[in-house]
Structure formats: structure tokens, C-alpha cells
Image (cartoon, rainbow, N blue to C red; front, top):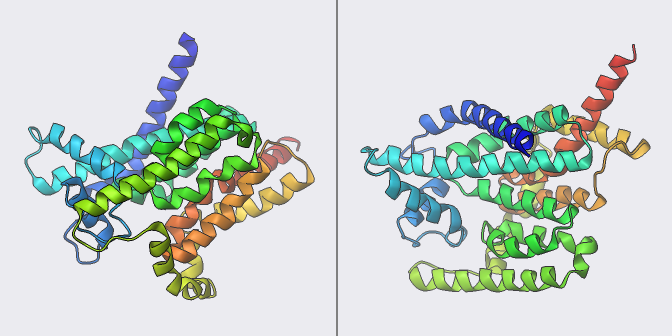
Length: 328
């Protein structure tokens, strides 16, 4: 037990060191008032002050702004610059979720059968990519979304149904884009769990209740998940057509770079010989993430939700190449 705790303490410190090195520049030099900055960070900062008069697309993503508000109160006596205080409060919250995601992803890779070294390397790929750096260093809410996605997958494959049932209502509040991922356990033996079914119903009920509550506190236009989804669909085919351009292809793969290509070859190798445990339902992460990317228009950030399957397949190629090299 002591050896295990020591290992995870060192692992957490390692992940923290790498994440700090990768994200600090993004946090330090991010300017909230820069005209090139979109409305997302500004809206989330307003929400952390209890102001929900923001666009209907973002006003219901309450967890990260709520936590940032409380972190800001703790930091007020020590940080006098208001802009830095706003940035730092979100950075701490997102950094914590990023660390949690790194550990969860490491555990998921270990469950798949990857060696400790490859599992750590896979976590490094997650930590150091452009999307994780962006959502950690800037006041955004996607860090909690990635944590929620990994927790759903890990608890599902390990068949920890009661823990999944307990966590699901909280995870459902991360971002509306997590909702289709809540249904993935239905494709496994988890669907037989009455705890999961009840929790799934409670989750959708809680999402509805929170959205109603926020709508009452806001004077700006409110919208259901369906209305928000429908409002994004007008640009769906334009976003699909963007893939025919170099700009669109670059945007789609900017979180992966060559690892996306590696994953294609890794998938082929795995189809010939199942070297690791990659559940078939994980493959659905790719079309779901791609669909969400086309709907939102943010191709790179949304498609990166497929990382729990893309990175493992890229590791399979790396593992295969290392084995081939060692034989010579």
C-alpha cells in the first residue's frame, strides 16, 4: 500500500510538472481584453461573478465558473491585480481537472494493457497537446468535460456501476456536449445495472432543473439543448466543407498532429492482432466527436474528445515499432 501511494505521489508530481511547463505560458500571457479573444472566456468570467446574462450556448455550464468563484475568494487577500486574479482562479480549477484527467487516462491505459512507461507517455501526449494547453491556461470549461468523459469510460470498463451512478449527475453538468457520452454505457453490461439507469434519468432531470434555474436568474434569451443544437446546425455543412481545405484539416487535427496518422496505422495493426484491450464502443468516440465538431464549428477542440481512443491506437503503433526494433 505504501509503495503504491509513493508511486502515485511521484506520478502526480510528474504530471503536474509537465502540465505546468506546458500551460504556464498560455496562462501568463493570455490577455482577457485582447480584441482577438472570443467571448467564451469573458462569459465564463462573468458567470463566476454570478452574472448569467450571457449567450444561451454557455450560460448553463456552471460548474467551472462556480468553482473559480470560490477559488477567487480564497486568493483575494494575496492577489491584488483583478485581471490576474480572474485568470489565476480559473487556471487553478482547470489545472486540477487537467491533473485528474491525466491520472484517469493513465489508469484507463493501464486497464487496456499498456505497460507503465507507455501509459505515462500516453498521458504526456494528452497533457502537452494544444487543446489541453488551451483549455487549462484560458478561462474555459472543457477541462471538466474531459475529466467527465474519462471518468465515464473508466468506471464503465471497470464495471464500477455504483460509483458511475453516483458520479453521473455531477458529470452531466460539465457541458451539454457530454450528454451523448452518458449513453455509452448502454452498449456494455452496465445497461443491466438499475443504479445506472436510475442515475441516467436523474442526470437528465438535474440538467433540466439547473437550466430552468439559470434561465430564471438570467434576463437574456434562454434556450433548451435542442434549440442550441438546432441553432448550430445552420453551419454544419459549411464546417464539413472546410475539411476540403488545408485550413480545415489543420484545425481538425491541431490537437493530435501526427498522432492522428499514427492512430490510423495503430488501428490497422490492432485489427490484425489484438495486442491490447480497446473496447469496440470506444470507436464511437470518433464519429460522435466529429459530429460535435461539425455542429460547433470548433473542429479541433471538439474533435479532441476522441482522444481516449485515438491516443491508445497511436501507442499501439509506437509499441509495435519498438518491438520490431528490439528484434534486430
